[in-house]
Image (cartoon, rainbow, N blue to C red; front, side, top):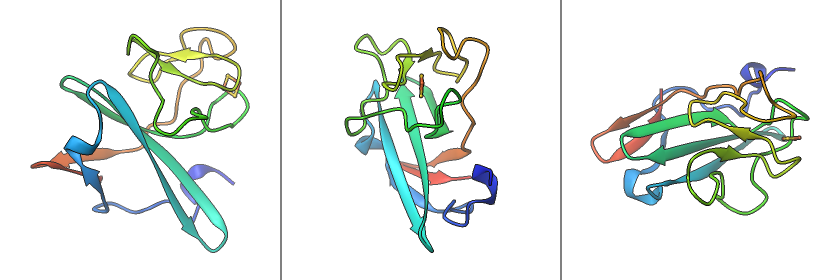
Length: 119
Ligand code: FES
């Protein structure tokens, strides 16, 4: 079953958090649970950039962060999958093996005022 079929995936217009709750630079993970299924997504922020992704590595399907909200590398230049160390650009492109040429699945989000919502 794909992430799009997951009943736990929230529809549009669901408030995720206040923008200030996401570090700049930094990231924040979100979990939704419905009928025993879990949808996991995360949002990364760096300056003007705010991007959401399904929290599932294209390599082995693992969540990217093992520590809460540690989605970015120390220099905030890349998204890091702690599973096997793949790096992704902040726009979701796999930049190193084992994810070179793969990409993270986008999760549509938007900022309204000072708050972040699903889109
Ligand atoms: S699960 Fe992400 S690099 Fe292997």
